[in-house]
Amino acid sequence: MAVKIRLQRHGKKDNAFFHVVVADGRAPRDGKFIEKLGIYNPNTNPATIDLDFNSALNWLVKGAQPTDTARAILSYKGVLMKKHLIDGIKKGALTEAQVEEKFNKWLQEKDGKISGKKDKLSNESKSATAARLKAEKAANEAKAAKIAAKTATAVEIPATEETTTDAPAEGTDNA
Image (cartoon, rainbow, N blue to C red; front, side):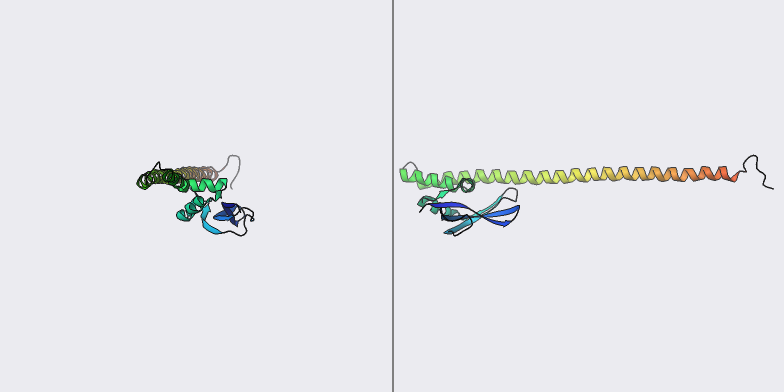
C-alpha cells in the first residue's frame, strides 16, 4: 500500500481550499483518508497554511510520499528540512543539538522573509489606497471647478440679456 501525503479539495467553485491529508494512493482524491494533517488556503496572500508539524514529520519518516504540491507546502513549513536534518542524525553527521540549532536558525530566517512580505503587501495596499484617494480628490476638484465655471457663465449671460431687453429696440414704437 503506497501512502501519499496529498491535497483534498474543498470549498466553492473558483474559491477552493484544501485539506492536507495522508491517504492510500489508490483512494480517490476527495475520498477516504488515513489522517488529516492540516489546511491550505491559496485564496489569501500569502497563502494560509495550518499544518500539524509533528504528525507530518512522523508520516514522512515512516515513508509517506508527498505529491508535488504537498511537497512544496511541507518544504515551505520546514517539515522536509527537519526530516533532512534527522536523516543526518541517523547517519552520524549531526547531533541533536546541532539539528535544533540549524532548524531554529532556518525558521528565524523564514519568519523574517514571511513578515517582510506581509509588511510589503500592507505598505503597497496603503500606498495604493492613498494614490486612489489623491486621484479622487483631484477629480472632485476638477468637477467642482467645472461646475463653478458653468455657474459663473450662467450668471453672466442673463445679466447681459437683461440690459439689452430693458432698452427699447430701434424702429419700434411703444406708443
